[in-house]
Length: 189
Image 1 (cartoon, helix red, strand yellow):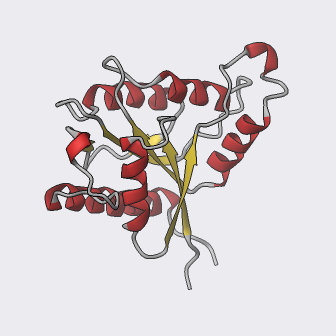
Image 2: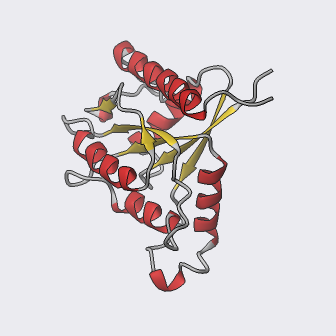
């Protein structure tokens, strides 16, 4: 029996009923066999302060541990003012400090997002790619999942209403698993 692939789902919004959290929960219900998705919200992470990086707050320590323990990352971002939300950038900054302590290094990852706007988080995802590239995260290039008009995209149970979008989510999750296994290479027994 092969071990379970551990994927960390990072939600880039603090809102309790955010569309990115709904999208991550939809992903949780659709995970391929042999995978486990742990959803992490960024609640409780204070603004980054370099004076405290040697002794980070407990929420930051937990974030770093969760990233290290994961085989892969799935990050869901909203789009605020044509870019990524400050809370997500702040968490990334905390997680990579002090300099040289980067739990993101060499992690496979995929991005997705949901917004009420018409561009479906495309600008935010491209900015996030720039940030994660600098951290040496090996991001999946395709398929992309950018949910526009998210205020109409989910049903009362939090599932995607549109079968095409649901199929895109399935493809993204399957591609992330395949990408992760490819990057991990043959496992010794």
